[in-house]
Image 1 (cartoon, helix red, strand yellow):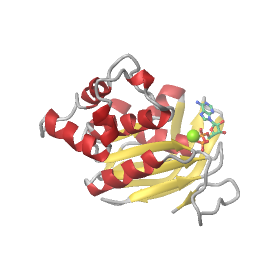
Image 2 (tube, rainbow, N blue to C red):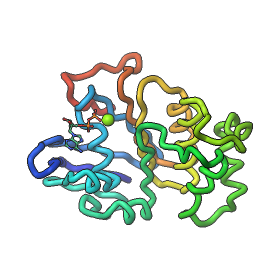
Image 3 (tube, rainbow, N blue to C red):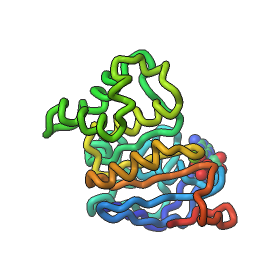
Image 4 (cartoon, rainbow, N blue to C red):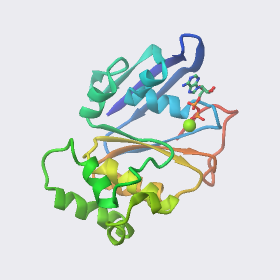
Length: 208
Ligand SMILES: Nc1ncnc2c1ncn2[C@@H]1O[C@H](COP(=O)(O)OP(=O)(O)O)[C@@H](O)[C@H]1O
Ligand SMILES: [Mg+2]
């Protein structure tokens, strides 16, 4: 379970990007974080995964707890080892590697079930990837690359997956749902398009 308590984030010691953000993700739940450009969605996710530190950002107030441990000042490697996987914005596939090689990279840190079983599982979620498994991933379409980065994240057996999505993308919605069924906890973020029935609230993050 993830709990973000009233955090404040400052970049470069002067730029206040987040103030008073709290959210909670219980086991087996999907939480969507919605907000207009610049509202602070990516900053919130980077605060959770620890990647803020790579951009001179700092959680200057509040706390973040994952599985009852404080992580707001932990390093990103340690947070990833606890089972928090962030799927970064921008479909960052390893372009010169094949689809299956990308998936194998995702599996490097996991232990437990066999590589073959894990591959079968993600190919069941996204059958298109099975057809494309020998293809150099840089040549995949945008949607196929999105399927691949979600699948690569799932190969690491995350306890919590942080997803960022730009615009409408069925692959993300389906990946999050299936990941959820597989007992992955997911936090899904959408930029741009607004799902029907969900309003934006004055440029602030609106929690669902
Ligand atoms: N690395 C950074 N350095 C300085 N300011 C940043 C950095 N990243 C984001 N910001 C600022 O923090 C605010 C929130 O940005 P961001 O979290 O990217 O919003 P969103 O993902 O909701 O569009 C914005 O005002 C943005 O300009
Ligand atoms: Mg963003």
